[in-house]
Length: 301
Ligand SMILES: [Fe+2]
Ligand SMILES: [Fe+2]
View 1 (cartoon, helix red, strand yellow):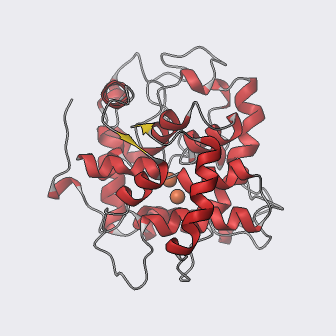
View 2: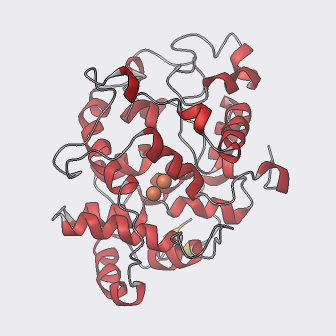
């Protein structure tokens, strides 16, 4: 299964376009993120507050989701796990990986957009400023390192965007659900029932989510961070679960317990982008120490 990045399957000018779209769908709550994460749909929300995000989405974002929903099949997600999760590409330290990712230059306006490294530092620095545990600050620093998949030829739709379970019926709350009509799995009787190939309550670990940067970085880090941090990494783009409350029938007790961790992390990812760029040179010693507390000098990618 080799689908590599080409001009026609790379609709986004910048990966930030997808993340900005998350923010339009899930606007920042008025309260500080660590006190009250806004979770799921607020039943008291007035009708006029619901916006039609799909109609308002940029054409590039729409095209991105069309490609994502068309091509992220059960078999594709399995094949990418096989291709990448042997972690036999290279050995890199965590800071080195952040610098490596930082070569990923989007075509967006350099005056307003942050580099990948700056997004990681802003997420981590907000966690630090809120007095969150050290492992969580570090989780913030590593959470998007899986986007290095873009540097290895993966198209945008196989790296970023909301993730969702493959191999069972799609939730109608996944953004742009209509685009699933073009996904061959939607016509495959093995995959289009509520549980599909899964057992009720099997747990998310057994679920083949659409492939992207979350699953990859989770696997890189899984021997080194506490379980709450691993949930944050593995499911931070699984908006249909952590923001929409879908797929309860696939969860086990461990998932229900750690959903809170994923939800606690999400505001730091979404709402900490500001124009003040963190000083990577000044911050590097702090992060190198923190990395050394949890990770070996070289990690397998
Ligand atoms: Fe991410
Ligand atoms: Fe992020």
